[in-house]
Image (cartoon, protein in one colour):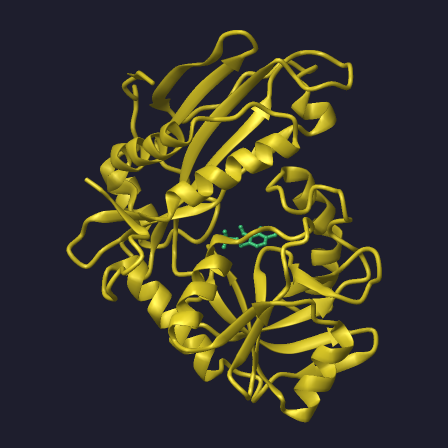
Length: 358
Ligand SMILES: Cc1ncc(COP(=O)(O)O)c(C=O)c1O
């Protein structure tokens, strides 16, 4: 797809940019450019543009504002040791984007164009790469319905957009263990949109997450909606349970869990390390019993934002329990180092997961 380039009339002055990327935080700082591609039924995707990041005019009747036809992805550009920027499994994000699109009755977006668009934008804004240790460029591709129409049916017009947000190290002083709250709310029902990365899922998670924060916890654990028994995932991360006999399990993808790319990568790395990894249902009662008996030695949470984090404490209306020593366990640290090492080019990339952007 041909990309039209519109020069930025007033890019951020160098001194301001340099100051901003020295302490970027997360999610509030944005680079100068964005990519947009439009879709019209009958015409397909067209008008791919790399131009200044700016507000997007939207008709008040645009279907996204009424029926939430919106999907997104979350990925990062890292810097390898030699300063080359690289993406981690971007084709997996492109494939998941299209699965989300299919569930939300939205058009397929060509996966090669998705990856090319991300690469082009990262290159255009390469000077925005954070100067802080452990920094990355967070990449947010998204698609939403633009057609002005109030009937409830799939829209006939969409916009695909990519923006970038320089991000600091998620945990400024190493990776601590997080404390999680088991929510009474559910995130996704069987047959619903749990496995799609659509904005609506996150809107529905805000109240439970707010409740977890108010109680002093870092994240929310969601149980299954049918039996309120089986552990599914955190608000924005997948889970792994590690046992003292070398077994490791993660909840199966039953349509209600986001199929994390970090989750998939960890399954492969742990198997190569000789662990017996399986996708198995695991109940909240068993989690408590195994933590209390010492059979469960670690619980890992994983996702693009924080890569791998230990869960140290679990709290619910039934009280609290601690996992292992309450801090990061051995396997969590090993897996984290391996994955971060692959992403940063210090550990051999045997799976060809890293795509250089040059
Ligand atoms: C609900 C949810 N689960 C899991 C994940 C982890 O997915 P990934 O490893 O692809 O970042 C995310 C983050 O994107 C998420 O939002």
